[in-house]
Length: 184
Image (cartoon, helix red, strand yellow):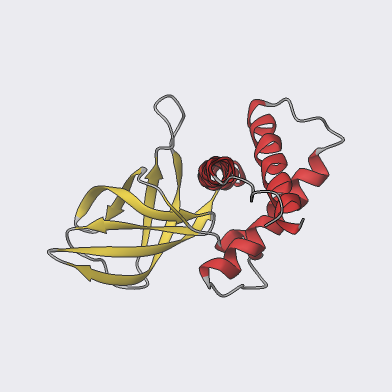
């Protein structure tokens, strides 16, 4: 019973998300959808075993693996890469040489072929060696509200994509299980 309600809730959330993206979500449903984003974000933060920072809000900590083109303006010049993961509060990406932790750097994030890049300034918070490269983790120091909103939509696109795969997989498993024979 609980699994059915959760499955329905997740399916409803993904439907609302698609309507939100297309601009067809009714004004009366917007508060429920935004609250569902907060709730789902909090659940996923717990699932990811991330620390919830009260100043940022739970949904800002939800990270998703996505390869999105990003360019940093570092002291050594422009560095192009792809994100490893991202959230509305920051991202990580592989670079050849790591700037020192604490470095502030302008960045450009391209979310789609035809959309304007999201521009802002980030702060390097970690350098993680990976073979002959370094994965840098950055937090967004300056970013427009509209840019943050676009990133949040991308994060929930990724979440809904995974939810749909999970729901389809669950339906196939349910269909492949035959009921027990009568009298067993």
